[in-house]
Length: 324
Image 1 (cartoon, rainbow, N blue to C red):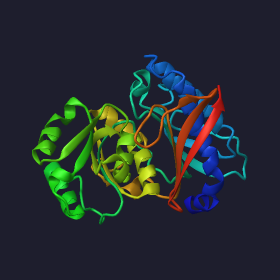
Image 2: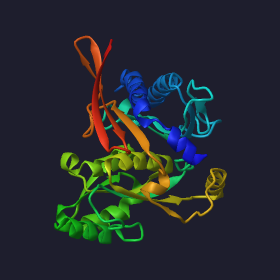
Image 3: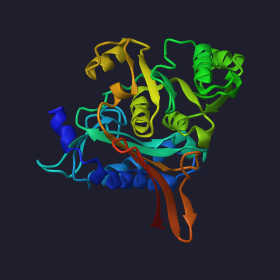
Image 4: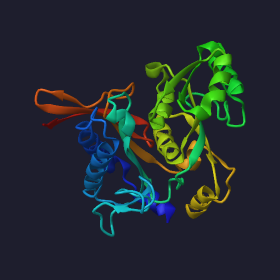
């Protein structure tokens, strides 16, 4: 079944449709940039993304979404989307209609509308718990850095692989109290740390665009669903990501069991999280180092999207002007 779904997954035909989905979500939430209302911005993105998804000729299931059915207004995990019939491709969808609701509400950089799509049963059904993550860009031997290393060992190993000093390495970390000790250790190596307030999908993508962003490595704990989205991007761009689920209580373990997770200590690689070919689209809501944010230009709202396919390694940048 999985093989058949992969054969049926026409990534080239679906890619422009996927870009329209992220564009619609970005355009809807852009109207709420700087308005201080996170929920309204998120809801606008969700509604627009859902409407566009339901126009696609697919039989889609949301495997990474806005939470469980009873908590989320729309686009919950397990929701079926698309207008497809029996002959339409069956696909897994991972999405975050607005990655960076706080960033949008406060008009801060790097808010994105993000979505990826692969054949049915090709993506890890990550439960809504934390994941310890470690990511680097393309061009390195597998396992050059691992989750079993200390932060110091990771910096030293990557510096050695790049032929530079630890002080030449820049690490992206989500600014949270839980990362205080890790930050102190990273800085003791001489490495530079770039802190982000939200948006760890963008943080991981930054590693794959080192020349553009100056970031070599991402580490720290954040949402497991975002880990799968980030793995989708790295599947297209190249790069490695390692993730281990973190559980704070038995309720979270039950959530993982319900999602089909059996080994709670397993370390997932990029290809464990995304097992087949994938397409990925991200549209800027606020300005960022990967894509520009939505902006008003001569009576239009202009957005920038990156659209990627893992099968070919292609990356398109799409500018879309939507009449205001």
